[in-house]
Image 1 (cartoon, chains in turn purple, red):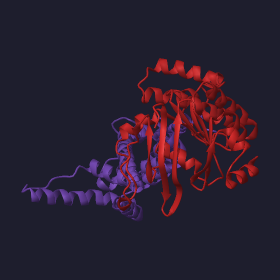
Image 2 (cartoon, chains in turn red, orange):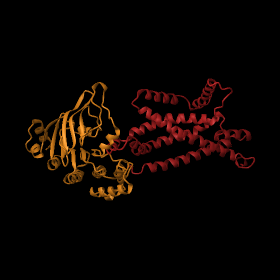
Image 3 (cartoon, helix red, strand yellow):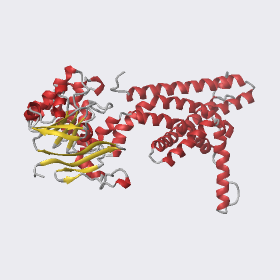
Length: 232
Length: 258
C-alpha cells in the first residue's frame, strides 16, 4: 500500500502529477477543439461550396481513421513539416516538436471533427423565427449571433459536447505513445518498476472514473443553468 | 406620395424561381391608418408584409419609409437576387417598423422582461433602468405585469403574443406590421390579443394587419385590402368591402369566410 503513498517509495505524487497533466491536455484541447469545431460548423453551413467541401473532407478523414493514428500523425507529421520548413529557411539541425503541443493538436483535431456536427445540428435547431424577430427589431447580425443564437445553440449542443468531452478525456491516454507522462503512462511505468501492474492500473482507472464523474456533475449543472425557462 | 405617408409601396413583385407570388402591389399607409390585408391562403398577404421590412427581398418594386427608399440594389435579372446595400440603414429603418409574428417568436432563453428590454438597450442604447421601467409599463398595458420574470414557455399562446406586442412597442415604432397574429392561437385566446390590438388602434397607432379575423378587420380598419393571386383584387373602406364587394373573387372569398 505504501507504494501508492506519497513517501520516498510511493508513486502517489507521480500519479497525481500524471492526472494533472491529463486534465491539462484535455482542457487545452477542449478550448482549441471547440473553437475549431465552431469554425468547421460555420464552414459546413456556408453558402460557399468549396468551404463546405473542405470541411466535409476534413471530418471524413478524421472520423475515418483511428484516433491513435491521428496522434501519431500530429507528432511525426508536424515534425516532418517543421523540418522541411526549417530546411527551406536554411536552418540546420533538428528542431523538436513539443510533445505536449502535438498531443493537443491531435486531440483537438479529433474533438473538432466530431464536435462540429453537434454544433451544426444545434445551430439549425434554433428556431428561425427567433432570428427573424431579432432582425425585425434592428439587432445586428453579430448581436443576433451572440445574444440569441449562441445561448440557445449552447443549450442544445451541451449534452452532445459533454459526451465528446468524456471521450477525449480518456483519449488523452493515447498521448502515452508520444512519451508524455500523463496518467496512464505513469501508472504503467510504476507498475513495471514495482512489479505490481494490476494495482497501478486499477488506481489509474479509479482516477479516470473520478475525473469523468466530476465532469458529469459539471455538465449537469451547466445544463441546468442553460435550460432555465425551457419546457421540460 | 403625401407627406404623412409612413410606408409607401410601389409596384412590389416577389418571385421564388418561376413562381410569382406578388405581381405588382402598391399601397400607402398614412399616420393613424389601420390597413387590414385579407385574402385566401396563398394570395401573398404574408409575403407582402415580410417584404416591407425586407425579411423577404422583393424581386422588383420599391418600399419607401418616410420618403426614404429601402436600401436595396436595383433589380437586375441577370445578377439574381437584389442585395441590401446598407445593413446599417436597414437596421435603422427596421426600428421604426414593428413586427408581430404568427408564431410569436419570443426569445425562449430570455424572461418576459428581458425580451422587452433587449432591443431598447442593444439597438437604441437606452439605459437599463429606463428600459426596465418602460418595459414594465408596457407589460402592464398588455395585462402581464405579473409575468415579467417568467419564461415564454411558461405562458399561454395569448400571453406570449401580448409579450411580443409589448416587445415591439418598446421601440415605439411608427407602424406595426401584424402577420396573422391570432392564427396560431387557441380560439379562447384570440379575444385577449385582439383586445390589445383594438386598444392600439384606438390610440392612433398606425398598423398593417394580415388577418383572418373578419370581425376585427371590419370594426377596426380604416382600409381593407383584398389580395387575390398576388394582386390587389379590391380595396376600400371596410363598410364597402364587407357590405358591397364589387368583384366576384372578393364576394366569393367573403361568402366562404363569413
